[in-house]
Amino acid sequence: MGLSQEEIIKQTEKFVQEFMRPIKEEAHKFGHVDRVRKWALKIGEQEGGVDLFLLEMAALLHDVGRVTETSEIDHYVAGEKIARDFLLSLNYFSPKEIDLICLGVRWHGAGHKEKLVKILQDADKMDSLGAIGVIRTATFLGKKPYYIDEKSFTPLNMSQKEIDEKIKQRPWEKSIVDGLNFCLNFSQYFNTETGKRLAKEKTEYLRNFIQQLKKETINL
Ligand SMILES: [Fe+2]
Ligand SMILES: [Fe+2]
View 1 (tube, rainbow, N blue to C red):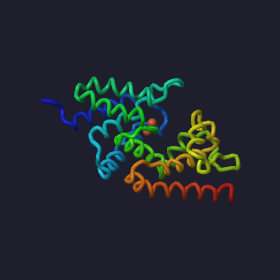
View 2: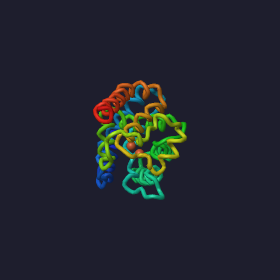
View 3: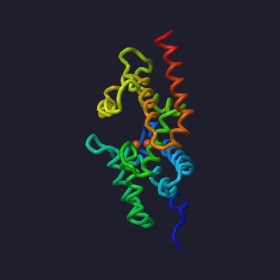
View 4: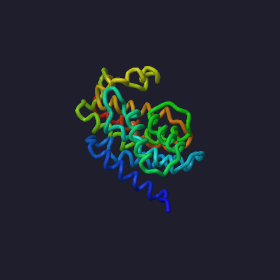
């Protein structure tokens, strides 16, 4: 008897949890992966037109490359290799299914028209918004000043192309607020209607947080 989908998910969870243990930043630990998986399923269920099992697999594996990324190989490319090796070792999925899951891992940042990829991108963005978005950014950029000043970079005033240029080495993150503005900027780029709708509450929360912070700091 072959394994059930539930058993495959359990094995994958276990693998990812173990594999990602060396990651020190709270923002990118397994908790993030788990939330992205839950958002992916919520969006996928409501959006339709996607295999939820393969979507969940892609969500679980999407950030494994964070462990082995280097300055030359980013976590998208590094992650695809780790995911493919793991999926082959399971001896469960067809080559086509493996390709689709790996497509999600490779392109979860941006690009690609495949529905599963689009949903995964939206789910990943979701974890940069709302209260969790605030705390992830604050811990990730913990060594930077948190306040807004005139030198602060505001992605909201820039085109996506300008942001893409800047983000390559992240030289623009002068403060935690830069990071928060960057996350808020994300909210304009949801792919799916479901993602857009589900992100509303978190987007408003983040927008209000930034305004409140400004009120309590530079506008005091
Ligand atoms: Fe990622
Ligand atoms: Fe992620």
